[in-house]
Image (cartoon, rainbow, N blue to C red):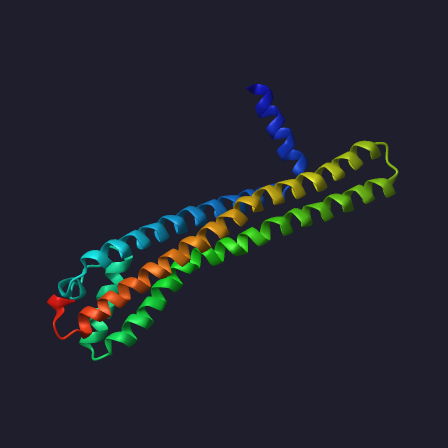
Length: 202
C-alpha cells in the first residue's frame, strides 16, 4: 500500500503543476455528466408517465416540485395572461430544453480543454528539456529526464481525462433526444386536452 502511495505521489510530482487543473477538469467532467444524466432521465421518465395520466387538472396546477411541473405551471400562467396555448407550450418547452442542454455544453467545453491542457504540458516539458540541454550543467541528464517525463505525463493525463467526456457526451446526446421526444409527446397530449371541446373524450 505504501509503495502504491509513493508511486502515485512520484507520478504526480513528475507531471508538474498542470496536473492540478487537469484534476479539476476531470472532476468537472464527471460532475456535469452525472448531474445532466440524472436530470435528463428524470424529465424523460416523468414526461412519459405524465403523458399517460395527464388531465386538465394537471394543467391547472401551480406545483413547482419538478422541472415538468415548473414547465406546466409557467404554461398555465402564460395562458392566464392571454398567451395562446400552442405558442406558450413551444416557447416554454424550448426554455426547458435549453436548461437541460446547459450541462452538456459545459461538458463538451471541458472535454475539449483536457487534451489541450495536456498539450500545453507537453510544450512546457519540452521547453524545460531544451533548456536543460542548452545549459550544459552537471544535472543535465536528470533535468532532461524530468522535462520529458512532464511532457509525456501531462499528455497522458489529458487524454485519459478527456476519454470519459467523449463517451459521456455521446450518452447525454442520446438521452437528450429521448427527452425531446417525450416532451413532444406530452406537449401534443396537453394541447389536445386544452383544444378539445370535450376533454373527457380526449
